[in-house]
Length: 173
Image (cartoon, rainbow, N blue to C red; front, side, top):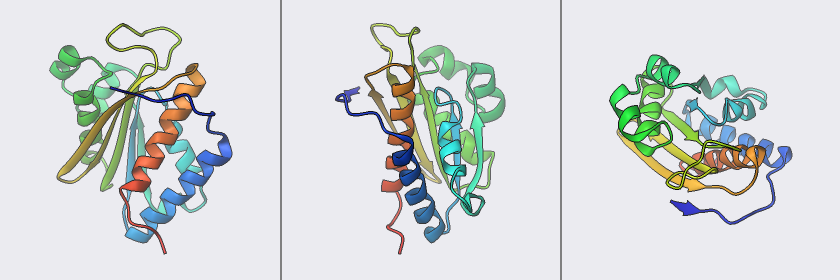
């Protein structure tokens, strides 16, 4: 797990700029996005839908905060949850694939983490966030640990997800 250095918090203007760039790239590529969010509580989808015209490139978002929601809405396996815990790369992998399977999108992002202030452990401290980025035939997962309070961890989660999605798409003209 890579420890992220303490950076200044990403303000709303930066999140809006990232969402706008993502939207331009998705639209130019003719791609559709879906989100599967746990610790971010729909914040990624919120940033995306703040952009006028986002219906041209966002299909839907899933907020799956509980394990039951992860199983019911995205098909995450009970076995995967039991063996690895909700905050794990195997779970976000299944979340992303489930979001693709239950949408018309061809690009998915999934996040699950421990935003705090409680809930952390030595193995998974507060600030641990697992990400998955999926397209048909390709899933990339990573785990990061963000510094800061609950708000900062969630804001950094959203910013990182938007940046990584942008990096998966060609530049818009």
